[in-house]
Image (cartoon, rainbow, N blue to C red; front, side, top):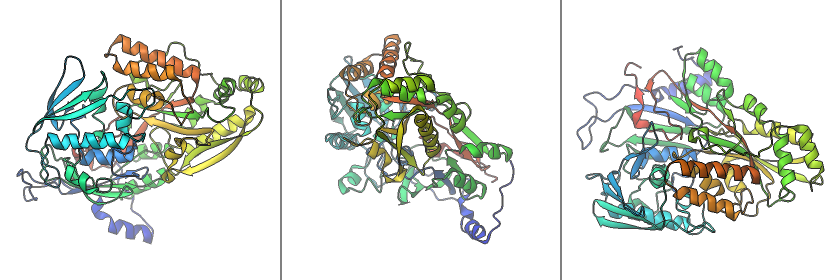
Length: 535
């Protein structure tokens, strides 16, 4: 690969001098420190740049990529996702058994595992976590647990019936109804088991304590440092110190990699693909496993008028948006499920780009020129939307040409953008957002978006909610696939949002990395990163 560029300015030289230890180092040798397992503890330092700060270090509280990525290094769940298939694989549970009626899952726990604070992993610790997750969701907070188990969801019966200690090394999880995605859902970092001692102390949001290959050392969601866990039961890998650093601007992430200030970064910007290729830098592309969309809030008049929503969809040139603002390989979306599920609707009704038709629909609608408040995030790159401000500008211009009046509402991502567009009774008429896949099941997308009455889209469709919840209970197979295809059709007729793209996203890593465990979910396991001993 091309050699790293040498910083030329005095400021850059000072930065480089202070950051020389941030590049990847050789894996630990025979004289390295050893943990209780007797294995050498790696000493290399690896710095990875996130595109946004993690609002909390507690992945059970929010469904945000950066929080989940950090949490995945520290906390482990009962099951993990197979890197190739996404199927549940052993983690803190070595095996499990499903009862004949599908209502009880009994897990056999890995023995001899301790949390980073020395607390022993046992069935009581597992149940303490499930009880906490249930309590977090009980007040209607939109947590990952609430979505999976339908806790606090109107017109949906809660699925969680309890967690029972069968023995110190065996725990039973009980449901009120069958739920096919359960084991796959438990692979999310949101279901990482935290030390009950840390939970009792109330430090888990800023200082997570798990059983994972890395343990918390210092920092917060903006810059956090993790150290290799010398007593980890599994594979330690090559990294001794792992730092996640927030660099919001894609151009600055690129510069940081080329100056040697970071060893890898997420969300390669569109303008960086070609320079990185010319310079021989490894750029690793994730398979499309997310959806971006233009949200339409039907609680804001006149967006409750189907003709107005159809006019919005017909006015948006999704093909141009994808060509101009997404990496090659990104697909134009006409539904919310990524193509990998092969559950496409057979009668999709999302209008195609037709500016003349948009004007005709608008003229026949109840729209009377009132300004539509259009929310969009700034200062962030997401797996589903790298250039939100530019996408907003193009979509707003297209809507104005069709006859709409647009009032821009830019909000910094770090100022709680997601919370503002999910706020009950919010005044957002339109907004840009998306959803990145967290586990390999269509319920991940459909339950979060359409599994109940929704403040984001102002949708309260009992039939749609029922269809989503019934589909989740069906066994994998043709009937389940057909159910989700039908849901896609139903959503396209309701048009709560205009799906824009199923995007490609990419990670760039420097020459010290010989193997990077890329994941379509973005929950990469950094103890599986392999470093070149010669670097």
